[in-house]
Length: 354
Ligand code: NAD
Ligand code: DAU
Image (tube, rainbow, N blue to C red; front, top):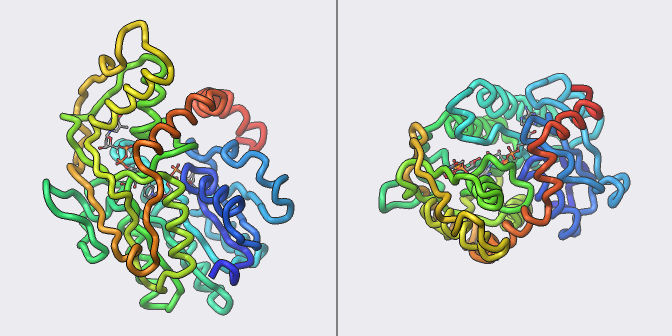
């Protein structure tokens, strides 16, 4: 399939998963077309993640700073670049932020997705594929038992997951009603390089390195399923290449873990790699704090459809993936410093005038 795509629009390509995806597609596949990366560069979008890619792949990578909620700009971009496929990552992605300020989630995740679908529909004569990246959070929360299947009813808990569920419905509706060629993937929690340090693993890693408190919500026994980001990228390409149009595929890591267990693992690895902290083992930094409102208890994902139909399975083990990730944050102190400092904001202002 990828060989039929000439101009692939990647939305949100400066974010965590989007930037890993662009690295993956250029460095590790035989894709020969162009990538047009459109990103608004919110606090979570960081052009540093793709530093040098335009020089490495001259003529094949183009970046435009734009908002997917701006219909006119998006329509113009589709025409100018003769877009024939979309891989849609752009979203407000952090659950805690959606609880504090849901508005942006509604605009970007729902209206932004609608804009892209509507414009893709206008280019149906030569449009190859709209791949929509979504989350397992649309299915809601599980008790001790149970698993999310593609047929599980949506029951989102947070404004974030409700906005993603809404976008998933829109994508399906554009296939059913208008015949737009679409595929959808619902994935579990990702971790790896370039993740903004507000999410559990990079936040705890950096706090542990710096000897700060490790704030675990509630009793720490909420369960997530974890997948190394490169495995997610491979799964997306597998679906884009072989997935049936109109279908949804779950993606997961078969790696259910309680939050507290992950935080303890991070403490132990940081102790080993950085040497002991003057205040003692880093597990002493763990602090149980007030729970997240509406906190989903457990996620578990059945991705057998993707394995049975398209032969995808996760490659990275959690133990080695976590260690690699912690090392990445230790080796990339300049990246960390920039995303957390005013310097990054100043750089954005200089380059993009805002
Ligand atoms: P992220 O927050 O790191 O990146 C989001 C990117 O989208 C940023 O670069 C941001 O600048 C851009 N963006 C936001 N609003 C925009 C707008 N209006 N117009 C253009 N660009 C905009 O997110 P992520 O973790 O990389 O997630 C990417 C996608 O994957 C999201 O759709 C998310 O729902 C989904 N997802 C994430 C995970 C995970 O564990 N992180 C798991 C499953 C699915
Ligand atoms: O399941 C997929 C989803 O995973 C994606 O759709 C979201 O975009 C992504 O942000 C992620 O959502 P979570 O809410 O699961 O991720 P987060 O890293 O925020 O939290 C993971 C778990 O850790 C969750 O149970 C809350 C808990 N947590 C999180 C933070 C930031 C803490 O206990 N303390 C914290 O400080």
